[in-house]
Image 1 (cartoon, helix red, strand yellow):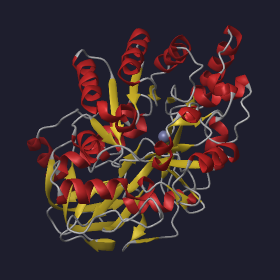
Image 2: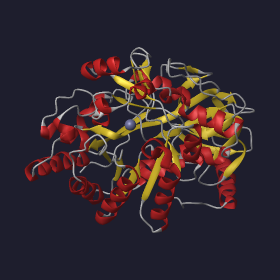
Image 3: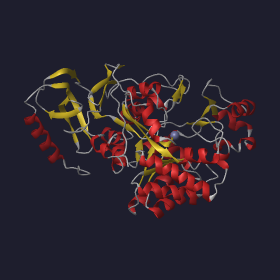
Image 4: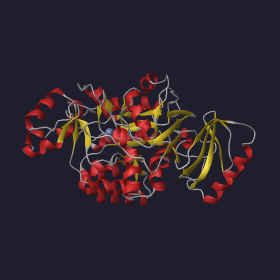
Length: 472
Ligand SMILES: [Zn+2]
């Protein structure tokens, strides 16, 4: 088990030992002359990195031999980014997010109701590593008989209240998913207004029993945050508040203060943000149940993803009937900056894309933080930004999935999941009209020791493997 924060002197010692042990042979891949950043050890220096059989075997100032040597002069060599919130779990989405530097993409908020089938569907190998939670939303849709075919309830699964018998049936689904190796338990109390906090707390208790974190898209603003924190504390569940930026809105400073206070009181609670002022969700979800009472001017903040058009009362009504995905504009840049700049937040994309239509956060979250907020605006340091993208999300899952202790790090013995980017040019280009424009400046991405992005292009390699908790 690696120490939580290792002093720099120890890291340098590790490097020296590794260099001595590397004389016995060549490497599959060498990343030469880049500036290596490992947020756990504090390493931030020009080094050569050697990879063999999917593992980082050498980190050295000495020149290394390899089958393939990548000259990374002027580039940053970072652990691959670990995204805890990615709904796009398809080749189309993986191909975009990997060009944004993501090497592990996990669907932990909504999750699935059938963990074994979810992993089986992807076992042929993917571009990036993948993983899933078992979801309370899905369990509730199933037990209450919601007619929705997408990610979220469109009827009784959202607003219905559950009998004791139905809550027990949901518990059985969650328990089976955890037995099958779910990485976490997912919740969307904002999408299930019919679920009382006592029901949510019952599922939190299962997460606690299995050492899994509860990832929740919570409801109800600051008061909702309070009741969510209390319920998790009551049953000893590790809590992860997803996209604090969108759940808090204008109350972002108060949200962050409440989470920090809970941490200071030793509660296991973490959070994440994506770096955009607009959200995205399904138009038939419970978030819009009060739409008929909105003032006319509110509709234009809503952009239909399928066409890019801004909505009116009439077109909103039609889309609500027919279904689809909608982007919701409205948060200020100051709110986004408060969330991205906070030391509490991990970066997570909340990405989704289908048939070329989606939110730009799918393809630009990480490059936007690195290019705009680190380089151009100096809102946070490069070192801190990389920690938010790598070691912080890796640690969140380590108690449940010990394999995560080898990710989010550039260390000898760690998995060779590595992102190489140019700090001078890295930037996002995707937009609310076209979310398929790839990020720029992320030239090499390695997953499990294989190049999945080579000189900016996605390769044919599919080394991405399941990340899963031990089966029971
Ligand atoms: Zn989400």
